[in-house]
Length: 182
Image (cartoon, rainbow, N blue to C red; front, side):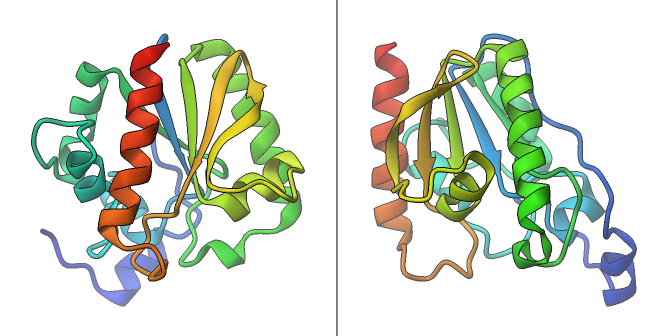
């Protein structure tokens, strides 16, 4: 893995990262926003310590552990990745509620256009703010967005320590089972 200096990571601030999407996906995973490592590499969930890729594999979504630079391989499994907010920051708490709400509006348009079966938002706080669902909890949601079922998953960031990889994988596996039923 490439090592970046603090200056190189800071230079990635505000960069946009391309979505990994296609029409008709089984599941469109939606992160909060790109971190600086993701923006520097152009690969989603690229920060060492982020548990997205291991949990995705452990839950049965992928037959092997993918690296962030193999993200386009997700499409062959009917999976994709986007973000609620497009701009890169060092921490999600740098985003304003207005950015989340606008991101939610744009995400709803994207989902309506791409028509995934399930939209899986990784981060309950981001989902609550972006869609005005103050009491949302981890798991399936009542609402649909752009025709897609909505599922909220725990944030895979290494900072989210109260969710173990095993517990996160169980929740991702529940989603996988649901996505395979539709």
